Amino acid sequence: MKRIVILISGRGSNMLSLLESDLPVEVCAVISNRPDAAGIEIARNRGIEAFAVDHRQYSSREEFDAALSAKIDAFSPEIVVLAGFMRILGNDFVARYSGRLVNIPPSLLPSFPGVDTHRRALAEGVKIHGCTVHFVTEQLDHGAIIIQAAVPVLQEDSAETLAARVLAEEHRIYPQAIRWLAEGKLKLADGRVFLESPGDPPAALIHPPLSP
Ligand code: GAR
Figure (cartoon, rainbow, N blue to C red):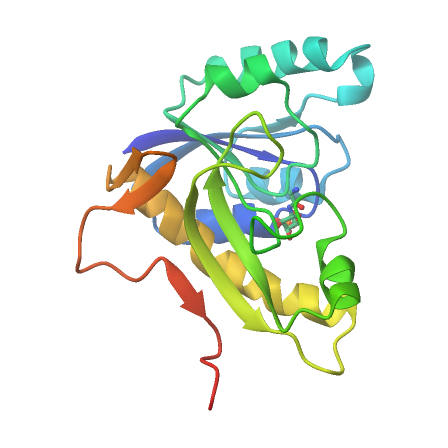
């Protein structure tokens, strides 16, 4: 069982999808940068230690990052999972967990890094949108890609309906990525992720499959 710490900022639906996926991991703690994050209560109700490290209590990003990593390190996790964590982490923090820090942005990287991804995807008129699980590097939303899921963008979509369709895919691909990571099946080479076992599910999902 790999020890993991999950970082959240809000409702925690990705966190919950991990908790409910029967993964070969022990979730040691859930930490939020916002004390009012709904996910804290959800984790506690499942018997998981959950608390906030409030970024507003620190005068600089470096101080916050240092306080956060001290809390994380107290649990000696092998994997640190960003699940809707909405703070940018500094270079020292990222380097400390290099190769074992993963994130899920709601976009098909390298398209639409950052925030407000669904509205931006609609504004660009893209026909396919989705989500990505990747290793975190110093550059925002720009690390080796582990798995992606794509959904069609529909004519009638609003940012909300598109977000909901993408979120359902997030809940499928994040557990898969963490399972691969926990089982040691991912290999990094030349900035790319390779999956070791040919029998495993594909790392690219299109849902629903596009009809001709
Ligand atoms: C998710 O859609 C996640 O992809 C996104 O925030 C949402 C959190 O939802 N993350 C980012 O935008 C990271 N930059 P959740 O709290 O219900 O998991």
